[in-house]
Amino acid sequence: MGCFECCIKCLGGVPYASLVATILCFSGVALFCGCGHVALTGTVTILETHFSIVTSDHAMLTDVIQLMQYIIYGIASFFFLYGIILLAEGFYTTSAVKELHSEFKTTICGRCISGMFVFLTYILGVAWLGVFGFSAVPVFLFYNMWSTCATMRSPMANLTSIDSICVDVRQYGIIPWNATPGKACGSTLGDICNTSEFYLSYHLYIVACAGAGATVIALIHFLMILSANWAYLKDASQMHAYHDIKMKEERELQDITSRSKECLNSYT
Image 1 (cartoon, helix red, strand yellow):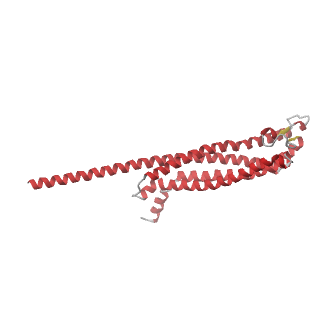
Image 2 (tube, helix red, strand yellow):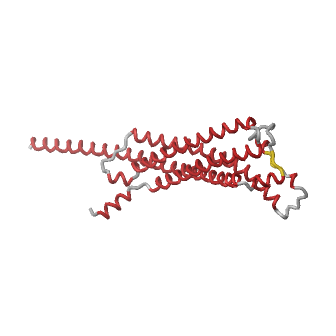
Image 3 (cartoon, rainbow, N blue to C red):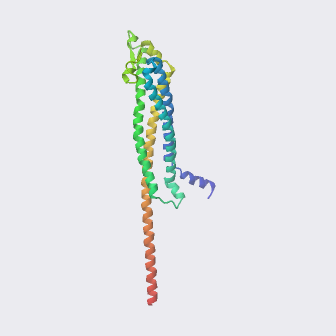
């Protein structure tokens, strides 16, 4: 076998579906974790500077955001490892690899591990649906502020007094009602929308939400791949059992035939 034929055969053993799902999962998790971490930091800066001057008013929110940032570190580490494991599982269950290793046989342990990955990926997919929905909340809040500022700047608005237009973040439950000042109105609100922290945090939240959606798609892709691999392993196990029974019956038939010939020869 030449070098070219060997390379073609090795490339045929790559589980491209699992590879695409792994790349999509890594990209989605990286976008969600990286952009979400920076956006949370910018959100704290905006709240401390413009909506809650007293530190004690938003102390709990600061602790919650720090906890969420630590959780982001854990999510990134876990999915980096889990994606590599699923990719390895795809390599060892693809049909091309089984052709390269002709003595490959499925075991009960292997089928149980594949079933466990199917169940775990399903649970993670449902959890990431919740994360995707949760990540849309800050996008909605920042969009409300951005649209309010755009309305004030619009020449078609015909506003007599822009000071009557306010955004009160206390109504969202982010900070308590006794926070000072708790809201921004008129030119102050316009200045907030023009800050780099607001602009960067708003777009990073959008990218983080998109990353969460990409992760959901990747997990659904993984779930389809794992289900197909589990069904393949089950069919392969049944096929091995069938071949074993068939070979056993053929040996018994050969034994009966040989004994019959011996009896016939002794009789003659």
